[in-house]
Structure formats: C-alpha cells, structure tokens
Length: 119
Image 1: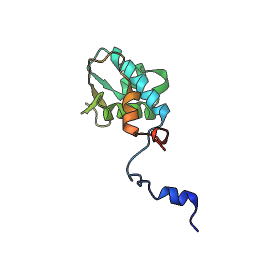
Image 2: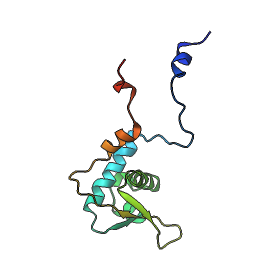
Image 3: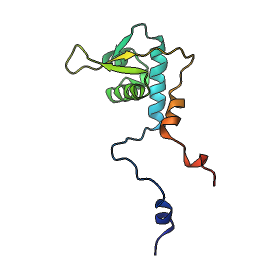
C-alpha cells in the first residue's frame, strides 16, 4: 500500500544534485554586507577587508565568503584576480538603486513557496 506522502511526492520535481539551499540567516548576512558595500569608498574589496572592516556578524571567514558569494550570484560583486595566490577579491557593482535589497532577489531565486500555490 502506498502512503499519502509517497503519492504526494510523485508530482514533485527532483531537486538538482549540485544546488545548495540558501538559508534566511545567510541572506541577512549578505544584506548586511551589501549595506556595508554601499558605503565602501573603493571599487574593490578583498576577503581580508571584509573581515577587518565589515559588519561584526560576518567577520569570520565562512560568513564573509558565503555572503560575498551570494552577492556574486545576484550581480552585486564580480570576482577578480587577487595579488595573492590564496586571496579573494571582488569588484563592486554600483547600481543606481536606493536601499538595495538582496531579499527581493532571493525570493525570485527560491521560486514560489507552497504557501503561494492555489489549491
């Protein structure tokens, strides 16, 4: 006998193997970094500068790189070659938007949730 959950699961597409789901706290960290980058005077930023001068909540290596990669995905940062072999550097993309939000792009990235689907 097939359970209810197996029957409901038949119509769903299988998740892609290489995709990583982004958690809301990662989006909040990326938003903090984006707000910081709007005030950053230079056109480029390195991982080290994010960890030294950036928001307090993203000063560890994992959060700094993760937040920057989310901003790369949405076009706010562009990776460029660093002067150091193990360094990371990004070109900041300035867009003429007042109060830019990563969360608005994130909702488009995640797609529609099951709450938005009509019965």
